[in-house]
Length: 319
Image 1: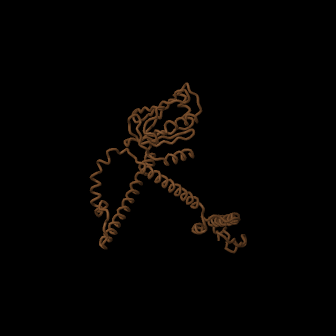
Image 2: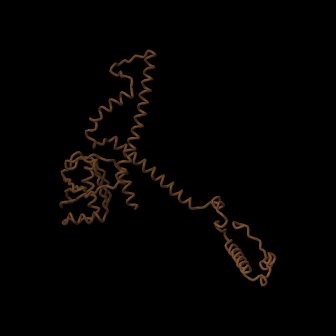
Image 3: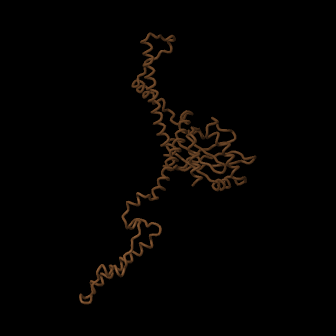
């Protein structure tokens, strides 16, 4: 469980990167550890994922590379060195040392690659399956919704700043200020006009929706970091609240009815004796009621007091 949480945290800290694999444009997220990795791919129609542990990597390596015997750490190191530059867009072109092949099989996606480890050919396949709804929401939907909210607020702040600047320039003009360089002169900003013109340009801006610029990648990672911090904080608060809710305080105990209050230390013995006395008295009373009137002795409260001397009840919860 800890390993999975660590992998999810490491993957969430990375941005989505647009890449070209075997002629197909995809958004990718990839994290490679020393003996494990996790990969996410999306064409905005589907999202695929693959998570491999040490044992899984070892088994697949033996099947795909029968002539090659190497520890899992060596495989992961080689995969990281040849795959990471391509999936992180550090290189715009595929390295000549590695060749990718993309293949769709139903709703699965397989990315095959061929490279070398030493002087021996190295083959590998990323066999990606459809990602779960939880993964899609965590890595795509929720961060992107947060990005739209942040960008919308950012636009609002810039709009307010522009209007304030226009008011400042107008005041300068009214006081006789002149613009020395005419090419810098601008028209007053009108929010409605700008929004209408912007909407008209939207079709051209959406021609390639798989582009994910560097500034947006940085915003994405910042939002994911903030969301993870809030998640850990809420988790800590929930844990504290859960623990406190099972520790009854003095006020909570005093609200309980007498029969439900927990006994104080040392009161169990006294409570048991009192309960036995009351039970015996009720049984004797029922027996006397069933006896004939002539045979029934008269038992008064004084007789009960004589047989059972009145004892001072202990002070405490059962008073």
